[in-house]
Length: 75
Image (cartoon, rainbow, N blue to C red; front, side, top):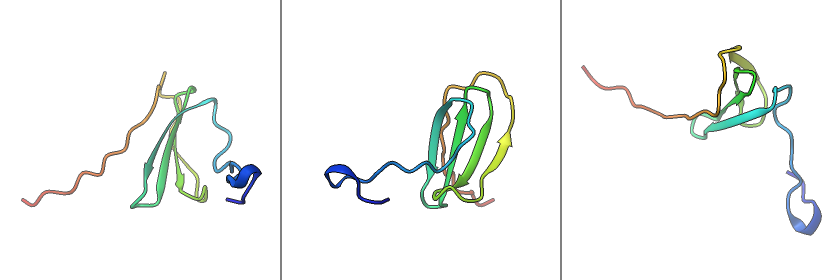
């Protein structure tokens, strides 16, 4: 991010075309973000906004999203 007023970085839009974004969850280790919108869709992209993808469309009313990294268990 470039330095803006008062030395603070200017906001940068990384993901667009949401129908009123309502939630975001970050997978920092995996370098991904997940977003939801009020249209009931779930999206993902890399943390820099590249490689956007739709995971699910029009699932009904969504009010947020959470990400959990659950390690695999040995059998």
